[in-house]
Length: 251
Image 1 (cartoon, rainbow, N blue to C red):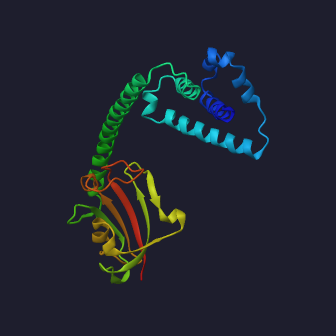
Image 2: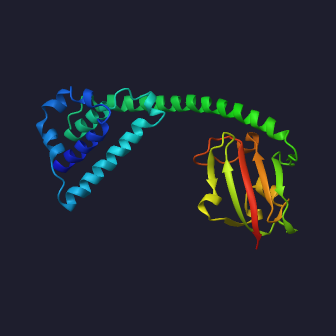
Image 3: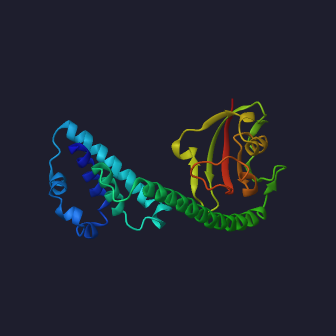
């Protein structure tokens, strides 16, 4: 039980960084000398360090949970999370199990609703930016529209033979959103990617066959195409995607 209390104390310390004034007024914290002494306890042995590290890890998980953009709109008092954790370990919960389960469902429903509202706001914002960008880009010199609906501009055709469906190619590329946010960049990592053309996405297959070795293309995939694609972690769904692709070699 001592080590569990130690973990909870570490968790409380992290959670209360931004709530110290409030925490110090809580009877549980003011009167519980054991909690206070645990905070002041030296971390000496490897066992101490191991368990302390677990406690910090738990605390960071909770802190990330509290600071999540969705949860921030719901969690009005992070300290109640600590109280709930403490009570659960002490087996002295202030609410019956049935009521706790009820409010866990309430919380889940509220998170889902908040997520939908945030997604709608983000979608509307992205749609406006995408429309403005596509209209402007489509009017630039040398911009063409493919049969799949992508917009592209060949910056450098390259030399030699064209890339074929069964070609194995080595490419550098940069992927970004219309607001300039990069989501991938092999130039920065210094590691180009190698693949067989017919094993990549249709929009890349179509556009890269327009290039030869050393060729470079600016490819814009509008949101009406990307919304049919699988969701990519870290990229808002249905976003217009911009790729700069350079064919380094045809192997």
